[in-house]
Length: 212
Figure 1 (cartoon, rainbow, N blue to C red):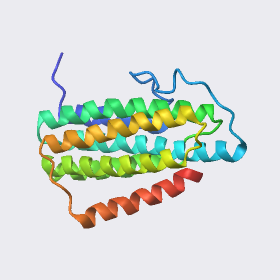
Figure 2: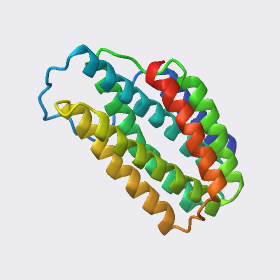
Figure 3: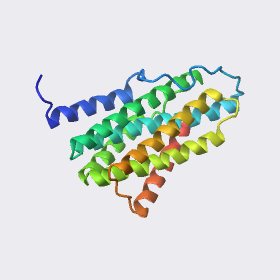
Figure 4: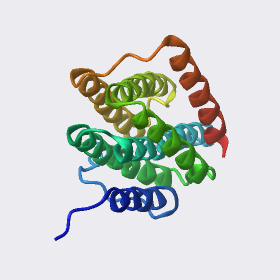
């Protein structure tokens, strides 16, 4: 079997992106944290709130796939590329869990997922071109921000929606581990203005994805 060239790897990442943005939900490699929990009755306002928050989380996982793909495509070292691929596989589980929960809530993913994917891939690739320490720093900052918004979602989700809450709690644990992984492998902490810009961009995405 021939060794994959950079072009082969890039095409593979683009294929994964098209599947994440347009294709059916992935099956995931780990069972959903909600698998053993009973569905509970939600009134219409509670269902709409839960669906909106899980749509944000689903879009966040589409963006995560794109970010990791872009960073893996431009990573300087094989070790960092492998770390990005491993984290992306766990994010695929998150994507599958969120897609399944949206379906259970009689809702759908964001209509703008292809746009979110394209923008996130470009940002990830740019971070990779800046060098592995900065790319890992981008992972650390992104995952810390995701961890914070998942904590916010745990506060906002209806208490009786145990299935959504279990998914969000497990995702929060994984994101914290990804952030620590980046630090352990030499991440440079991003400047505060960059982190504020990332937060502003994420807030725009969340506002749009909650409704559309």
